[in-house]
Amino acid sequence: MIEKVASAIDSFNAAHLESPVEVSRIKQKFGGLRIYHHNAPQDIRQLINEVVAASWRTCEKCGSTIGATTNLEGYRFTLCPDCRKEIKLRVIQKSKIHIQRINKTTS
Ligand SMILES: [Zn+2]
Image (cartoon, rainbow, N blue to C red):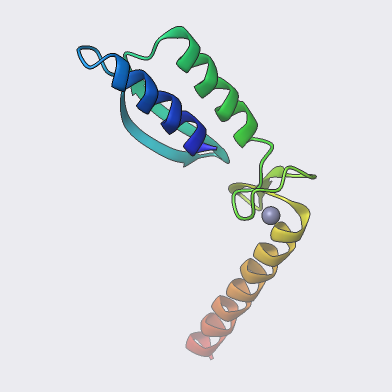
């Protein structure tokens, strides 16, 4: 997803050396992609908006767009059903270990 934006920005910047598009930060927040940029023309802003919108429907782990949804017991990730099962299992195992530790210290 990001490669598409990076490629468009590289092409634009190669042709506009005097006023390049600057990307200051790319991150995941609340399950979606955030791209902080400066000086992007309309067509690149449109592409960035499309990629950000698609990030909400694309699994962060495997890239699948089938059934990808956001949220997991308070942690916000966009995941497909298979990756969600795997992550959920890890969260449950972690909380069991935490409970076992609490029980050990209190007994
Ligand atoms: Zn997945």
